[in-house]
Image (cartoon, rainbow, N blue to C red):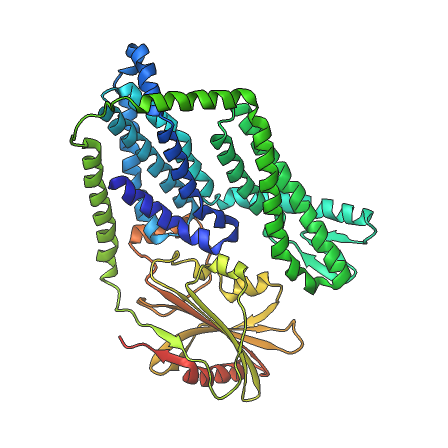
Length: 525
């Protein structure tokens, strides 16, 4: 029960990344592969085999766990408390995901070592059983998203390497191309190289596949390392072939035609990498490991015919202690935030009702934006109103879905500049009233388009003492401060409106005010 709860909390922490980030979509398969490998270990009779080995070495097999073992168990269990406390305020922080994964794995290994050892009557047998399960459990770490400090430099290195090699090779094929950082320029335009094209996705997937195949086929450590290296080379070569194809399509049919080939080419290189690793792994097995495998299966079948040495029902003391500690942790963490959230006002929420007296065009929001902002609901609409061209983006974050400061890190000051626009002026924080709600807005002016555009942005916290916002950055201080203050994300929503056809801030404010009276729909308290 305690282990099941901890694994549920861990997987629930990772599921959002597995869902919104295509780079880690394979994470959904990893828990099932771990269970599959553990079931295979149990079926092949590792417990019985090692009981036989333990009976030959009684002195080494019957030693009780030492003080260091219990200290490690206590340390992992204790660190779970601050990790859960920080995770409540920062559910999207990858360092918290890694801390929680390592703690859950450590506690799982310690509990299995204690319980299986006591259940078999021989501490040595229990420890060997846990050592047999060690790789299947540690294999779960391939599904934990890499820390940004590690992932970003690797993506940049792979991108520069792929862009440089693609530009050289495509030139040998008679297609002129020039690289500008992470952009390849051909005769029909420029093609940007995103994170997916860097090859990081195929590299992480092949790493998972190569580790699984190495364990499944019982390869030696040297051959497993060779398989992992081969997986990296396969991912690099197949991704290079993918980029060559996309650049060739861009030079022949135009840059706009690349999106039709982007995803099919990505799936193809993953299938190619998997097929190459599959055949290579079976080639590395050889005759000797296969013979050992067959012999071990025969021994396991013989041992399964013997009566089990597992003792009758007993009290699992480590599980009882862990259940008590987890109850204290969960109750303590919830009480920490509930007491401080009780001081906040009741939630005030609202929604958007799009205009019905004009044609409203539904625009898409790119998967990259979804991955970065991690919103729960998002809508992007465009329409004509009173001679103005309007575009509005409404995003909603449910309580506890992301860190409270994540949205403040992606205001128009950051995102418009990242998209290549130039902000020439911005207003102070203004309060616009719509249907009894006082909405905080800040206006921005862009002049790098055919005609001036004004962008109005509102960031709303459902439970806030003051209705205001400012652009900030996500750092260690902004991560720890909400946890220490007991402030979770109590629900947020943002509304960004772009107006074209007005000449100044006053005209933009009047147009937005008129629009808000139509589209804002307050919810009943």
